[in-house]
Structures are given as C-alpha cells and as structure tokens.
Image (tube, rainbow, N blue to C red):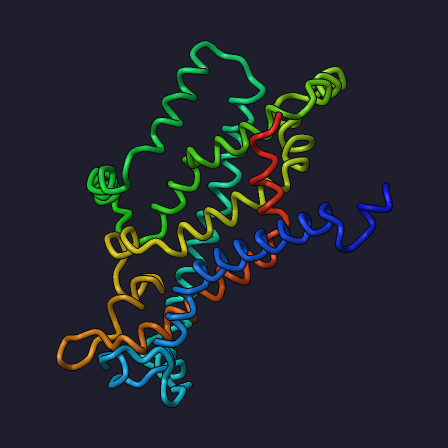
Length: 287
C-alpha cells in the first residue's frame, strides 16, 4: 500500500468516500420510498376524522389520537379474527412448505420421462392470475362441502406452490451428488434421504418459503371473503369490511389504525426469520 493511498486527501480515498456517500444516499432514499406508505398509514391512524378530509393536506395530526388504536381493537373481535388468520396461515405455511420441498426434491434429484416438460408446465402455471382459477376452485369446494371450513387451505397446502417448488428445486440441485450416493450405499431409500439428509440441509429455503407462504395467507382477502362466513373470517376481511359508520362510509382513521396492528405480526416474523429468509433467497438459485 502506497503512502498516497493512505493520505486522507488522496484521490483514491476521496473517490472511495464519494462512492460510499452516493451509495448511502441511494439506500436511504429507497428505504424512505418503502417506508413512506407505512409511515403515512401510521399518521392516518393517529388523526381525527376532521383532519382526513382537510384541504390542504395535513401531514401531521394536530393532536395524536392514540385512542384510535384502542377503539379499532375494541370495535371488532380483533383477537378472534387474528386467531382465525393465524390458524389458516400456519396450516397453509407449514403444509405448503413441506409439500413444495418434497416436489422440489423430486424434480432436482429423481429421473423420470417428461420431467423437464412437467417442470416447465409447473413454472408456466405461475403466470395464471388467481382470478382465473377462483370460480372453478369455489365450485369444487362447494361440491365437496368444504365452504365455510378451513379444509381448502389444507388442500392448497398439500398441493404445493409453483414458486416454492422452484426455490427448493434450485437449492436441492446444487447439493453434492455424493450425499445421496453414500446414503443409498448405506441402504436408505429416497424418502429417508429427503427427510434425514436433504431437508435438514435446506433450513434457509425452509425459512424463506414459510415466511412467503405465511405472508400470502395472512394478507389474502379474496379467498376468505369468498369461502368463509363472518365468524370464521380473517383479520384482513374484518379490517376492510367492519369499520363502517352509520351512514355506510368507511371510518378511515380506525381502518388505518387496525391496518397498522394487522401488519405488525408480519414485520415481527420477518425480523425473527430475516437471516434465513435472505440466505434462502440468495442461495436457492446457485448450483
């Protein structure tokens, strides 16, 4: 290392500091763009009803209405709806993660005629919008007597998810072939190889897949609204449909306060599992 590079005023050090400043500025700006809507949601939940329609827009409330959160909590059976959402999200998250891991293992490590074609069809199914399959799915569940039950989420979980299958397939394809060869020599079948060798190795993808699946279900509004009655419905449906005034208009500040409380569990889950989530998303595409 030369003396010039050690000099704080050298062109190299100045260029490095400039690049870092630009990078930090971009990161702070992008973070602000992502946090901006959530911050506006929090501020809306702290405003009085008269401030919501004020012109010009009042960015900050004159007096922080902290009681809006208590009112939003007490106006509906908040814990009951949250419990329903948690049950559905856990059922679907656990089942779809395990089933997707099993299917991804098959695509990655087993040989069969037409495997590439089937995998292409699976990946192509990700381009189908949910609205296309919604009506046929509802009719099937209605014929089977599963409307107003949680069985649809059990069946959806057991059916795996194309995107999660892709993540597991990419991860399992990158593991050394010697692992399963040694297990086969020891007398293990592919079921034992999956459960005892490959699945424990895939904890980053397991974490990422569970967070993704849990978020999908926790934030889903259409399926619970269509398949469940009011008593069994989820918090997403309750937040959007129950905060209504006597005139039939939404109580926006209470909806915003309830939405903040609705988002908090997802933020906590991500903060707890973020290391595994980031590791799973970054390693699942490497071979």
